[in-house]
Image (cartoon, rainbow, N blue to C red; front, top):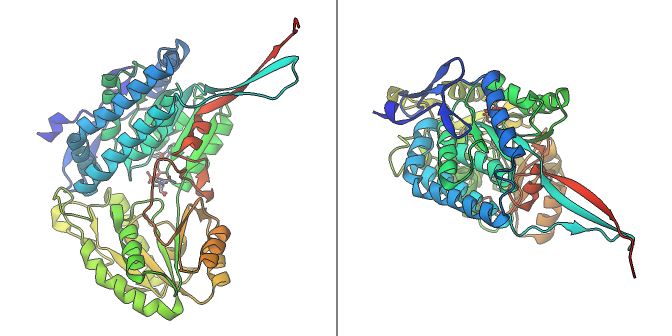
Length: 489
Ligand code: NAD
């Protein structure tokens, strides 16, 4: 039975261990409500044990002391391990958080493996600097690993979010203590075993499952953690910065929420592609994506035509059992999140938006958590469904009349993660892209994604960037060494 297959115990110092007080919590599948396993409910004593192990591994240099070429080989082997266990990991991810298994396999496992491989390959291609000082001295400017890195991640892409942080952090020689979301802890625990199998030494990569206030806060407050890297909500992200300040002023990096505007001008080069992308991007991963384009601004002259095309595609996203290979829309991660999405939908209705399709729970008889793909039109910027991150399959459609107006309205958000503009006018595309306050702006597409480009937001979407070589900045300190030169010639 699955319950006996999945091991929910923490992973500390190279071993599976129960929480110190043996506490556990139930891991329930949103696919059908079944109990998958019980998981260690780590608390501050367990966090402390993991940090002590990580510190010892850092101090004795068992990992950072290895030649870069050796670390590279091990990181790449770690990536290979994910691919070798792809089916197992994909099934675990789908059962744990409800996403369609076809995407768990083709997107989540592959992206996480690619990320580990990319940082592994990058690590021995980074050179340090020598400053252009006078000849009487030499100044070496070198990057050093920051030390013990605490990592806290959400549940929407459990493996990918973890990989975006553990890969650059480990590549440069840090030790890591990872706290996965209590809603999706299983793959992170398995990754730690695969890392050990690949040759990452004991104590270098530890995983401590548990709840935010009980396991996450002690990690963010820990006096011997040098850096905390967080992905999650803006509400908790703000607390992470406070906790860093209240403790040892650890470096704090936060990747937070979004309410991304998708702006379609009447001169959009390919209306059908824009419709497919608008619909596909909001409903991918059940709408549980930080960068989902959840505010769709359509120029008034094409609004009705565009909306008609949107509604024609929505039935393709009917929720179904995510374990079935053809399913494109799976389950919402748990009952709490499903109820939150349904409350937002109810709020949209009561504020006067027009509910054009969806709006209800689906497949209730399955025992799982499913919500119909939902489209609201007649939305105004003041409505909560246009301002708040819903993190579910809900699209808000708004209309606009001119360029300056839509830019101002698109920017009127506490968030600034991503945005898109659709137009065949190059001047308009570049002008709008420049004026939008977002970490990433897409022009005539929303799908491009690559490990080589940074990911992160402006404003309350967070501080710092995941992915690309920029991520190394988060996990390294810059050190200068001055050397006096008394020249004999
Ligand atoms: P969340 O903030 O509730 O939880 C995220 C993590 O923080 C979890 O592991 C949780 O246990 C932990 N946590 C909760 N309270 C804590 C506390 N007091 N102290 C320390 N840790 C605590 O977010 P969520 O619901 O898991 O994830 C959804 C959010 O994540 C959305 O807002 C989404 O936009 C965001 N997200 C952002 C990105 C990005 O790259 N910008 C990517 C994915 C998700």
